[in-house]
Image: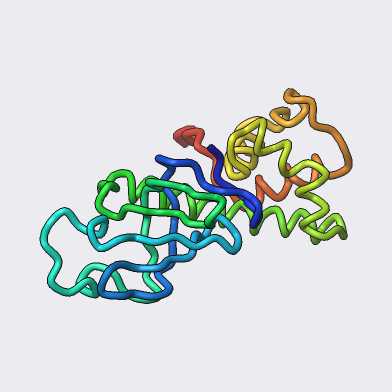
Amino acid sequence: MKAGKRGEYEWPEEGELVVCTVKNVKNFGAFVALDEYDGKEGFIHLSEVSSGWIKYIRDYVREGQKLVCKVLRVDRDKGHIDLSLKAVNEHQKREKIQEWKNEQKAEKLLSIVAERLGKPVDALWQEFGYKLLDTFGTLYRAFEECVMDEGALAAEGFKGDWVPVFILVAKENMRSRRPRPAS
C-alpha cells in the first residue's frame, strides 16, 4: 500500500485509509471522489457515517468536504467502493491527511524536477518515479532521504542526469530532520 500517483486502473485495498472529497449527499449516504485514485468514486452508507443516530446527514458530511474514510469493500466488476467514515479515529485521520499533504508536496517537487530537466512529469514517472515508490514507499520519503543523505539514491542503485537535479530540488524545498548544531 503506497501513497502517490495512482491511475484510473488502480483500486484501493480493503482496510486502506483514503482521502475523499464529498460530491453528492443523499438522505441514505454520500457519494465521494477518491482523491488518490483518478476517476474512482466511493459511497459512504448512512450507517457508516457515524456510530450514533443521525437525524440530518448534512450535520456530518457536506458537498466539497475532505474526509478520510476506511475502505470496507471493493467490487471491481460493478465498480463499487464502499467506505466508512465512522471507522476512522482522529489520530488515523490526522496521520492520513499529513501523508496526503506530503505526497501533494512531493508531486509538486517532481514537477519542478521535470521543468528543470525539460521533460514532462509523466515521463519522469515512467523513467524513475514508480521505481522510487517501490524503493522508498512514497515519493515524499525519497525527497526526504536525499535531504538527509545525498548518496541515498546512489545507494539504492539510481543513476542518471536526473539524480543531481532531484537532490538539489529536495535540498531547496525540504527541511532536514537533523537537529542543527547549537551556535
